[in-house]
Amino acid sequence: MRSSSVILCATGAALAAAGLLLPASPVAARFSSFDPQANEVLNRMTLDEKIGQMTQADHNGLADPADVEKYFLGSVLNGGDSDPKSGNTLADWTAMYLGYQSHALKTRLAIPLLYGVDAVHGHNNVLGAVIFPHNIGLGCTRNPELVERAERAVAEEVRAGGINWVFAPCVTAPQDERWGRTYEGFGESPDVVKSMAAAAVRGFQADDLRNPFSVLACAKHFIGDGGTTWGTGSPIDQGDTRVDEASLRRIHMQGYITAIEAGVGSIMPSYNSWNGQKCSGSHRLLTEILKGELGFEGFLISNWAAIDQLPGDYSSQVAQSINAGMDMAMVPERHARFIAALKAVVADGRVSVARIDDAVRRILRVKFAMGLMAAGWTPQIDPRAKASFGSAEHRAVARECVRQSLVLLKNSRKTLPLAKQIGRIHVAGKSADNLGNQCGGWTIDWQGRSGNVTTGTTILAAMRSAVSKSTRVAFSRDGSGAAGADAGVVVVGETPYAEGKGDRADLALTQEDVDAINRMKSAGIPVVLVVVSGRPVILGDALEKADAVVAAWLPGTEGAGVADVLFGDYKPTGKLSISWPRAMAQIPSHPGDAKYDPLFPYGYGLTY
Ligand code: BGC
Ligand code: BGC
Image (tube, rainbow, N blue to C red; front, top):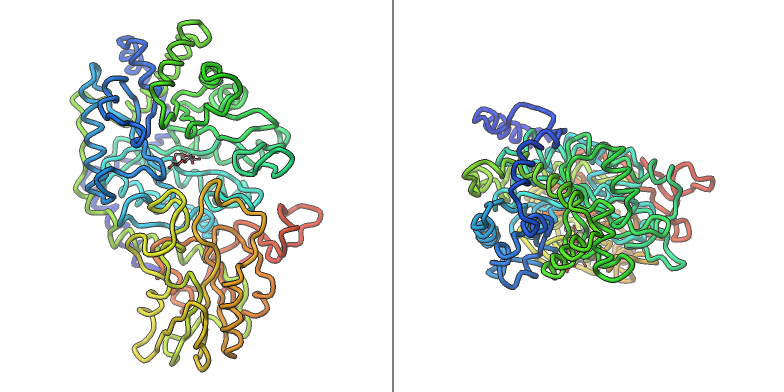
């Protein structure tokens, strides 16, 4: 447990000594303090240059990278399935990033790009990056200081290839776990979300956005993405959040308040609606509340093609969103269409030049705060950031996150911890030796994938290296051959999914999982059930059949953190950040509800 923090402190100390970790000054940034410089640039910009700054294209959508010059683009992103054309190594990502920046630097004003990726649990699209537990597991650690260290490491891995902006943290407070994005939230309670949101922003942005190890953070998705009502015309993903304003503020706004206090420089308005109106087109939410009342001085980036979902024809959609307060548009496939439409609505007076100037000023403020606007700026990659990518130090931080995120739900007859010297342990289940299942969605691909997707340690491999030489760890996916073992561990749960495709009306274990548990049980050995999933699943009889149950969430590449808990090298400290229901009919249900009677309540977690 100590080793990882010592290593990290050593790194931190080295950076501080080198003058790279600037003294803790709240970036909590008065971004507006950069207005004199931003205005000076703004005054020299043509309308085309301004609208270009407000436009973000996707790498896949840019048939010709020289469009960055032609349209004066302010930003480029890689979506979940948008890898460099040459391959998926850090070198490919670096070359791609540098290529785009070189185009930006050839424009008249040479304004560098903000370059964004969804680093939601590590630099997760890139082969070899350390994959951290998804947020639902991090919420169970109740350890904001650890989350800050984790996002610090993620920021270094992102900067290892030059990229300077992450669409993270997701500060949703998922209220209905049938939603396929539940795991992107730290938990159902605004309390856990608000402390983790601030910690994550501090981790990403560090003390100073000019630091070569910092990335711009983006709190998402504003607001109520986790509060949609499933049914009666509302899907659960991108649906309608039907709550009064007091509940919206109490449940869904808390993470934004703390993220803003921590200095977050960008926020992503959500696909969902609030009481029938799309957030991406709401002046009340974006301008009056977020920028006015909450004092947010950074800029707003739309969600992927979200503007296209507003009512009316395309020019009305663009006018509505920009007038609501959207500052930059994520128009992944059709940047030229957006630019033409925005120019047209400025020309016909539906969007004022003052609104355009406000949007561009906000973007430029942040670019100044990041040091991108310094005279003669060229993209620099610090060799220490590069060396940190996928490093043992970062793997140690992730392993620490894993062991603190595990929640022990049941432990009869002291089944856990397992002895390391025990003869034979039989391991079973589809997720025991499956890195892709451990990582979940948003890993290498948008929706994730089962199998050997990247570099890491499966739970089975970790167990094998943890036991003493005399102990044999056998494995059969279906649980056959377990008879005669001294203990059994069965690792089952969900297979990878992400937004949209992960919405489920039924969260029961699959028949394959139930069969594996039954085979282990019928072998007459003590059975430990490890659940790998992005949300609570309905355990049914499995709870009785298993002697011990551990919720491992989506731990990522560092399976050793799971072995640490199973063998007692780390005594469990994780507490549920989401209620664990007995049956689907109990969903949604939250502490304080009159009929609150889950299988395991929010905050539950045993130890040894
Ligand atoms: C997701 C966002 C993500 C964006 C860019 C959207 O579909 O909802 O969370 O940041 O795509 O990949
Ligand atoms: C992209 C994601 C994006 C999604 C939205 C996918 O093709 O890779 O980043 O969030 O589309 O629909």
